[in-house]
Length: 191
Ligand code: 5GP
Image (tube, rainbow, N blue to C red; front, side, top):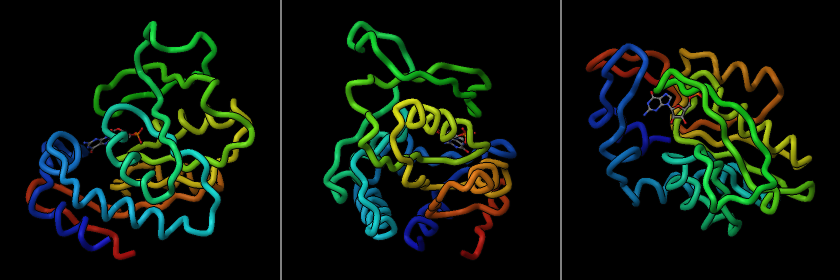
């Protein structure tokens, strides 16, 4: 997606070797106009699928998922990372390894909001090693729902997540795929 790449190039900051900071438009300050185009693009790509729910993970997936959901006209469910009295007792649960925080955490979704009749599109901001998406897929599987596909804003193609998910037969649509990056030099894959 050209518009997204044009935003990443001047505003993305490569701090360490494998973390891209996009706080200026996606992860802290949010460019709603850009997110609107991203949401529209996911709808174009999945226009032939009957999506009934969009599933994401808190926190940074929520904004993208909500804007996309306006085009799909379906609810968004976000997997919660913390236990809380607000959450129902009956949950689907799985484990995710956080690439940015270097630790495991549990995610949960109330059984009330996902069931075997659902056709789910997973949406997230980044795809690195694939743990977040696999954790969400596990929740979709526990609900016996159908996973229609995975929509990613930025895939780091030099990490293993993309291959891991595609090798499992999952449909993965990434709007920008980074081939390599170092401070001051971000290179995209051509597709
Ligand atoms: P994965 O589970 O695929 O290894 O990592 C994906 C998750 O980690 C995303 O939900 C995202 O929040 C976070 N993440 C992974 N890599 C990056 C990165 O380079 N920059 C930012 N901002 N977040 C990342």
